Image 1 (cartoon, rainbow, N blue to C red):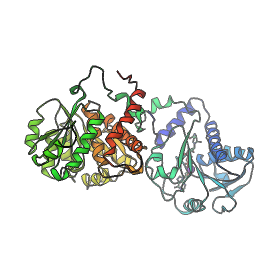
Image 2: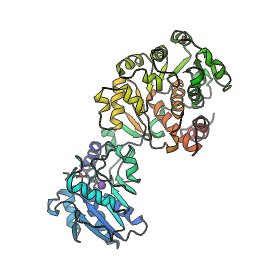
Image 3: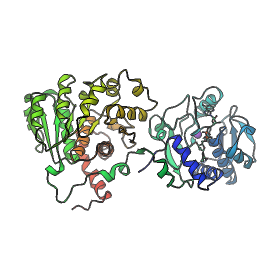
Image 4: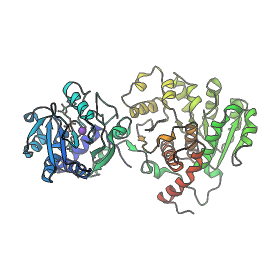
Length: 499
Ligand SMILES: NC(=O)C1=CN([C@@H]2O[C@H](COP(=O)(O)OP(=O)(O)OC[C@H]3O[C@@H](n4cnc5c(N)ncnc54)[C@H](O)[C@@H]3O)[C@@H](O)[C@H]2O)[C@@H](O)CC1
Ligand SMILES: [K+]
């Protein structure tokens, strides 16, 4: 698992490493060395300004300054605040810097080629205002490339939000593990390229910290991924049902159904109003279509226990009918995915949705930001949570279900607080119908009895990889097809031998 540490967890990692016998100043020396290495790698960084803040982030900058000067770079150190106000390891780092110290407040950039931003890191405690904010804004306006130490100063490592101001970095050097703010927008975009430096904190400190947030990659869910078994048959790979709207809106369900099939469900049946039957029957040969007039008929169809997962929402139309369809699907032997109109049908009434989902074997909801806001309208403890990560976690707890909060930085959270953050979605994935395919991927993995949190996280990652595979110009129809080469690489990496 590629853990992400929030500032509190990172402080604990530091503290445990120090308890284990590594001096704090040693960690700072290694951190500063990693920053110096990054600066030295830049093209022509002959004249480097290092802006140092009042805490240990500034200490890292002071170490980097000393090392870069030793290596022959022309270095200027500019401090925010008084030198004799520095304490602890940062004060020790300042004593080792023997060159002049300027004021960050009055620093000018005409003769500067590269900036190292070591003003604030994990210790950012409030919004930047007054002098610190002005310093960051002038640094940002200088147009010079910036290497950020740990985080661009002003960026909140827990939330990915800018507190007052932050300067765009070309590169960010962080330590031990990335933080959620490196992945959550706008943080991800502000960081530039992120390098993770090993500063000697042993990975074993994570055993006690037990982080609950991870990068969404196969390390987060690969062990739960269901690979095709040699002795399998189509029913053992699960039977997914996708509820469709009428003939005019049937495309969404078809995209989802094809996604479920490609994701590996053994069978996929589209349940549709009779007027849409011909449309679906004439679409893909591998899909089955069954006419279903209302929720009661859907319930009768689902008396067949071989349906292991159902998707309700894409193209369905919002209202009591969609609510009833979802209720018909939610049963103890079947997992459900509620998407799109199924979510909008419960606008402002998340408690009613939670009650329906609680009857399912496993439940995943896949809202985009608009659907999320409608669903939780009036619930400030969810909508007012401090970050996208916190909102998804609060929503998952409220619904008792896995929440996929979509976007370029999709967060998947489960009721216990475990979460993944995706970073592999290309910008061109934002296209009509892409969300329907994603819901289909989730449903297809749930149908194979993959646990909901792993299934949802895997589906999000696969969706991003499939988009990369298809490339620019992508339309949603391409996504299910692009899953094949992605699987061709993924399966062997998970130990599949092709049997
Ligand atoms: N042993 C450790 O803890 C290590 C820490 N490291 C560095 O230390 C950093 C964290 O150090 P700190 O905890 O000292 O925190 P920071 O150096 O990020 O910032 C803390 C200082 O900033 C002030 N401050 C916070 N928010 C402010 C605001 N909005 N306006 C004005 N002043 C504000 C605080 O009063 C304090 O003086 C990390 O980001 C990393 O760069 C590394 O050296 C590795 C080892
Ligand atoms: K910084």
